[in-house]
Image (cartoon, rainbow, N blue to C red; front, side):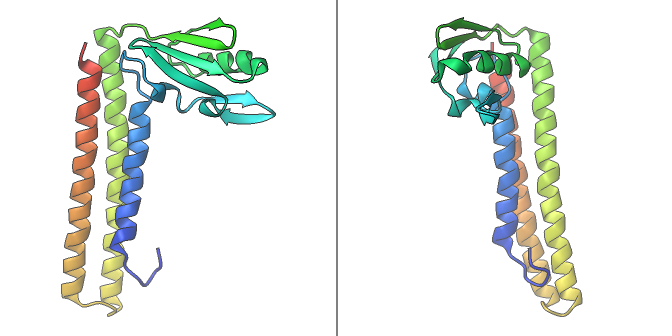
Length: 187
């Protein structure tokens, strides 16, 4: 952000970034149902570098509690298997040729509560990120007013806009958290 220009849209974009990040993290939490999002963050050692699993295979959900990973290159099946096991998702791949079948085990009550705690941590991280963006915006407005680049009224009006954007972002975090919590706790 430029040191002498205030851009509310830039602040909103940065707040949206925190929400996007939260959405990605929440999609990676296991809910007892098969979801391709579970495997989004898995990196596979392939062709001399680390590559996302979805660039090496097709991931499908043939049943509510089963994921299929169709590896395109036969020579990478073992590497994909290893990466899935190393991801600590509690999933054990059953390999049939170039297809890895991942059964999603039932979640017990205790495990569900642990996952909800993790979701709350992710949400708090997103809230903190949004508040940091708000703080940056308010500090810039105060500096602009102090340097007589904007009037006190402009500063207050724009600070209210920053707060409105912050409140909307925090409300979105709460909505995402509550939806995920419901999804995790529903048996």
